[in-house]
Length: 211
Image (cartoon, rainbow, N blue to C red; front, side, top):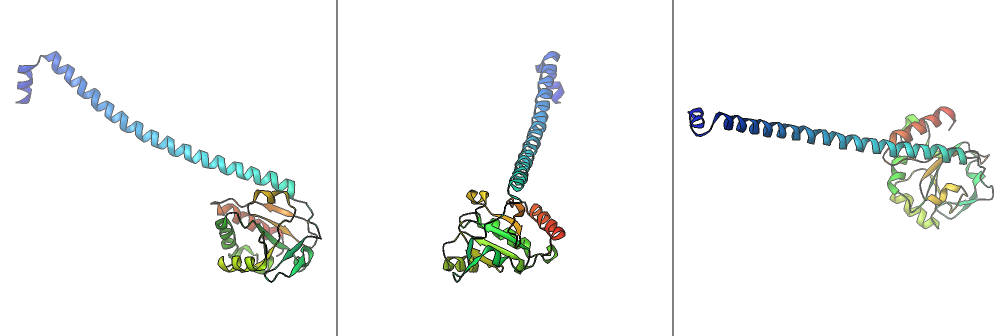
């Protein structure tokens, strides 16, 4: 019925033209849909590339800074303080063997420290609590004790404004291995939101040091 009405009111050329327009409109809609999908995939791919580039830059930074600081000997005259404000030389707190030192600025990312300590609770890493030393930049034992309690920290904690390691000015968490020689080994900067990299670092320490 519709065909006959169209045939009566339009010429064959007009009907053909309308059909072409309809087909063109349909093709345009399909192409737009696919374009939006491709655009979404491109945007997703671009995000992934940016994330990987960011990670590679941080890993490169880790390697470069680590190579600069590894082998640095800390000063024997450097003093650290516990929650009761008792003072100790660095050599004294290392006397029971190899230690994993975590240096954290009180103004730096608190979640970063939480993440590292949570990872180290994994007993398969082979680094027991008594061999982990956290050194912060607090001003006194009262502040340090409050910080330790608030964050549920179980390892040995001391405060010291400056270990005279060049990277400290960045006010970011970092870790390294040390013993009575006071030589910095395996310097590492944890990367936020990438716990697998930290875990690989701690596993490597387990395989190369006796804690």
